[in-house]
Image (tube, rainbow, N blue to C red):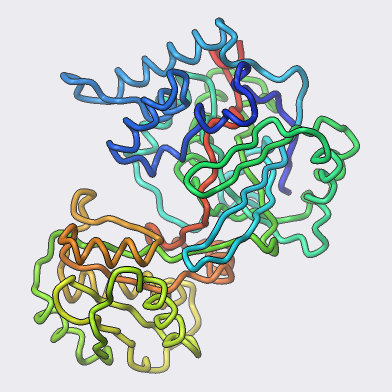
Length: 435
């Protein structure tokens, strides 16, 4: 079962709802050095100092910044900059935003503490692969601070919308956060009504939860739970729960964008790559896009994919656009989960184009990602990457099917938009965060 319960969130205590954007930030894993510095400069108590501290000159690992984060949370709690809410609650959260094409949406979610379940032993399902390095950093950071800083974004299916509607009365009062940043308005309330919370618990008890964003954070929470158990922590303590933001899959604001690839280091020229692709892809040329035509290119890509076709767009910033339409596959031997994963557009882009045709580097410094088609094309035009590769989004139905079957999708297969704000609520599970 998906077992949620209220928790006493740690929050900024001396900041008005309208100023919460100054002390919160995007998730740790989207920071560039420039963005990190911008949030450092935004406010002396911005959560970036906790979730993505700077590595100082002469430091060879994460130990220094983890130590500084531990000092910050300890001191901020002592000084009253951060404070735990007086009673357990869940936290309704709205995000109002505009898609790259101009459509305005609102996504309704809520924060709660969710009981951890090992994969395959409950109803919480992953869909993406994880890597040891970020989990090692998070294990040290969360473990030393005693807090889950970054929420895990998950979705469930609730056709009658019972869970979220049970919280609606709590949203009639004044919000505890209400600000706009980077085109997204964030509004947060607090609900400590036992009847409403119990209604949410009942509504989710027989549901399944699918992790959309935060696989490294969830698996780190599992690792911290195991460490706590080995140290003799009692069952059903806060270490058995993690911080999760839950959304209804049928919510009108559930938007999944593609994650376009920007290749910086190629092992083959564009002409060589196109020659390698010619047997399996139909290649159609179109005039090079002018600035501002990214949405039109994305829309054409979607139209060309009608009927379930795999279609990509390739642009090197010099020649024309190339649309790559995969030719019909030979009938398969069966509808296995491995075939389902390999037939995803994102898998074919990686296997056929990035690896097979371009033999491109996957090192972090050699590949970048963006959900915005205009930014992708502009990067190629400006020479910031050698090739921009645009693709269509992965359907939520594919995420659910592969996750339930135990399959794992390639890295950056989905981009659930917008990203959750970090620092609105913090879940304490051990000292110093828990006091």
